[in-house]
Amino acid sequence: MTKFETLFGIKESKIKNTCVLMPILPKSVLSLFGIKGLSRGKIYSSGNVENFTLINTGIGASFAGDAALYLANAGCRNIILFGSCGLVKSSGNIVVGSLVAPIECYAMESFTNMLLRNNDFKTFYPDKALVESFLNNNKDVQKVSCATLGSLKLEEENMDLFAEKNIQVVDMECSSFFAAGTHKHLKTIALFYVSDIISEKPFYTEFSPDDKSRLLSSIASGVKSICKFVK
Image (cartoon, rainbow, N blue to C red):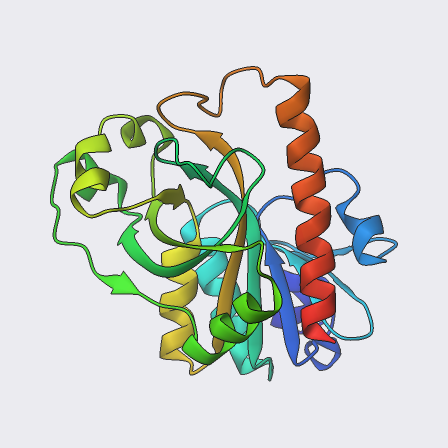
């Protein structure tokens, strides 16, 4: 068994030209994608449908970034990151359950830099043509500015920084994913569903039935959008 197969659970030759990375797998996602199950590797779990490979990366910037690097070497050229994000503050047109696509992402994934308030952060971007094509075909998806963080606790203590840089959403993978894509000349795009609001409905609170319903609907809509776009 090769190193790649050991890590990803499938052979390198089985990787499609397009891959979808998911840090977490909400219930029903596999069935929505039409995948019966994933093959488990040491780090990642993978499965194929006709037009793409779905990979469960686990939560964290390095897992997503490493996956993009490995997949580039395996011949993958287009990668979509599909996951959740937190909304920094309420917005008139973005709520829990909204679908958003980052058009820029600040690399704040260092826990230490965030703790020490070292605020010289680099910014990374998706593939411009790919994200514009996706947004043109999905009018319900809204453009946002994102920051990738390395701490759930510290996000609550940096609201002033987010406001200063006009950051609308935060996640835990996107900047490393975009950085790896740029480094390997991959076409990358991220699609997120808003799962919480830092200042009002943080991730650790119990959500209302309406919020839960919107989230499930949003995830299903995201899967449908991805499948249609890849075709």
